[in-house]
Image 1 (tube, helix red, strand yellow):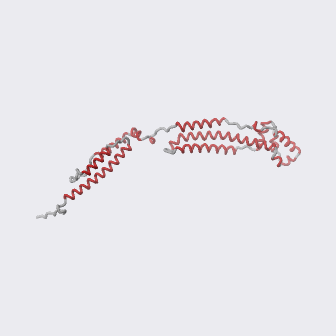
Image 2 (tube, rainbow, N blue to C red):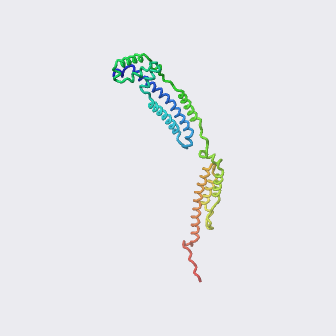
Image 3 (tube, rainbow, N blue to C red):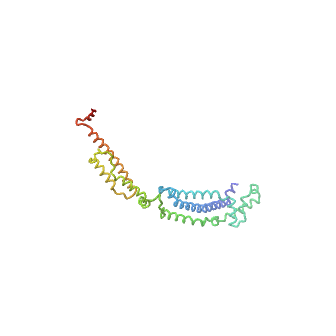
Length: 278
């Protein structure tokens, strides 16, 4: 059996098995890679809608993962469908016209191998297969599906370079928002006008001519007159004016309380005594 395992018959069958396996792998590899690239193209098209604001490397990482998964799938299918020794022997008989000598020799059992007829058949098969060139009848050819791989790769490159996501409401710029939402801008302008009104506490004793209060009013006017070309700037102006207005009103109240306290005191610093009824 050891001599039979290293015979020309077994070597040629093993060589034919390897070539059949490689051919199966190439066929599946072309198809699976084309499918992986096609899925990568689809991912490039839908990724901006699924993951808004994602990192650019994520697109290529997923596309590369799909291509790698296609290669793994092709290898798995080739291993699953790998040819057996009998399949390779039958292919040799068919391609070289050996009338199933190789297949019959591999199927001989030990008692048959020991018989004179078995030995004669084995010797004839070894002599015939030793003279053949397995590579000439088992070439590794590329299937037509392999043409889909460069086409899909080219389409993927075109999509990656030239595809631009159409603008939607979620992807408009600040300038576009002003044009698309004039009602919001009008509301903000209306709120801004409210801050331009001088809202003073209803107290006749408030010192309206205080220099510090005038300074607050000037600061508010400066904030309101700043440029506001989009909604963000408009909101910022309103917030800043609101903070200044709050400080202005607090200062009015403090000045009013101080002035009222000063009027209620006598020159000696004490409150005047109440007159008794006569």
